[in-house]
Image (cartoon, rainbow, N blue to C red; front, side):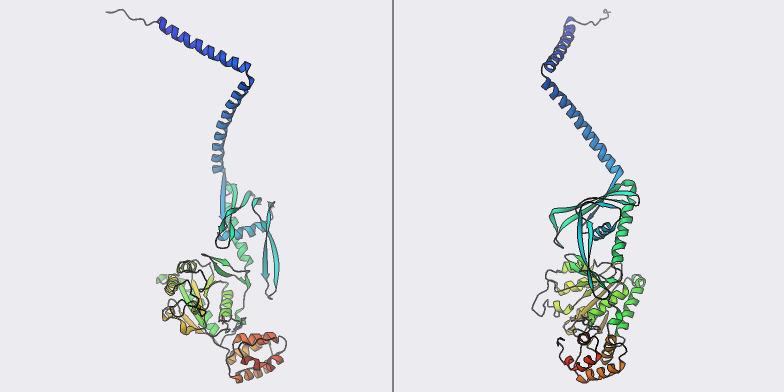
Length: 446
Ligand SMILES: Nc1ncnc2c1ncn2[C@@H]1O[C@H](COP(=O)(O)OP(=O)(O)OP(=O)(O)O)[C@@H](O)[C@H]1O
C-alpha cells in the first residue's frame, strides 16, 4: 500500500503566492505614491468614485421616486378637444381656493331676456402651473399649450390640462368634473344652446340664447299644439320603442313659405323642452357623407337636430343648390345618416324647407319623416293673434286691422306682420294706417 501522500506546498506554489503578494503590495504602494504625489489625480479619482456612487444613488432614487410616484400620486389629463376641457377651465376660473400666477381672459357676450347683450370677462388659468385646495386635498394643475399641434376643428393650439394629486384622493377627480359640468349646465339654464358643426364635432355657436317662449310664435289654430303633443308623446314612449326594437327616433318636416315661423317655432319648442339645438347646414362646403353620418350619430345630449332648407342641398336627388352649388353630401348619404341615427336617447330631427315639392319621396317615407306639417302665410286668425301680441287689449283696432289686411287679398307672412308692428311699437293706429305696405313682401320699414 503506498505511503499517504502529504500534499505540501511545493516551492513553486509558495513562490507564486509570494509573487502575488509582492505585486499587490507594489500596486498599492504605486497608487499611494501617485495619490500622494498627484492630488489632481486623487481628486479626479475621488470624484469619479463619488460620481458613480451618486449616479447609482440617483438611478436608485429615480427608480424609488418613480415607484413612489406611481404608488402615491395620480394624474388626470384633460385634452382641449374633450367637452370637459372648457367646463373645467370655467370651474377653475371661479374656484375660490386657487393660486394662479398665469391667467388668461375669456370674453363672453351674455344675451339677457330683454334682448340686451352685456360683456363678461372671465379670468381662467393660463398656461403654467396652478394650485387649488379642493375638499381638503391639494391639486397641482398644469395647463400646457402645444407650440406645434393645432386643433383642426377650431384652429386653436392643442392644449392639455393635467391634474395631479395624492393617489388616496383620486376619487375627487370625478366629483370635480361633475361639479364643473353642473356649473357649465347651470350657466346655460334657462337658455338654448345653439350648436353648429366644427369639423367632426358639435360646438356651441356664440353664447346661449335666451329661450324663445312658445306662445311668442303664432302658428295657425292647433298647429303648434299638434306638434308639441306629438313630440311629448314620442319622448314618453322610449320603452315602447325599445321593446319593439324600433330605432328611437322621430323626424318632423315643417314646410312652407319664407318667414312663416318654422325656425322660430323649433327654437321655441326646444326651449320649452329644455333642449338645445344642433343646426346642420347640408350645403356646408366641406361636409361629406362620413362627417354627416358621424355628426348625426354624435349629437349632444338633450338636443334637437335641425336640418334647415333641406331642399337647398338636394333638388330631388341632385346635389345642387339654387346658385348651382354642389353639396359634398350625397342624397343616399343623407338617407343613410337619417336611417343610421340610433342612440340610446331619443333623437328628434326637424327639417325645414320652402320647397317641399323638390324633396325626393324617399326622404319623405316614415322613419325619416314621421310628421309633416305646413306652416303657411298668416291666416286671419294669426293676423289677429299677432296684432294682440304686440298691442294687448286693442281688440277694436285689431278687428279693423284684420279686416283691412285680409281685404288686401295677398299672401302676408307673419315675418312681414312682425316687421310692421316692430316699426310701430307704440302705435297700433299707425300699423292700421300702413296696412297697404303689406302688399309688397320685401317692404323695408324705415
Ligand atoms: N308665426 C310667427 N310667429 C312669430 N314670429 C314669427 C312668425 N313667423 C316669423 N316670425 C318672425 O319672423 C322672423 C323669421 O322667422 P323664421 O326664421 O322662424 O321664419 P322661417 O319660416 O324659418 O323662415 P325661412 O323659411 O326663410 O327660414 C323671426 O324674427 C320671427 O320672430
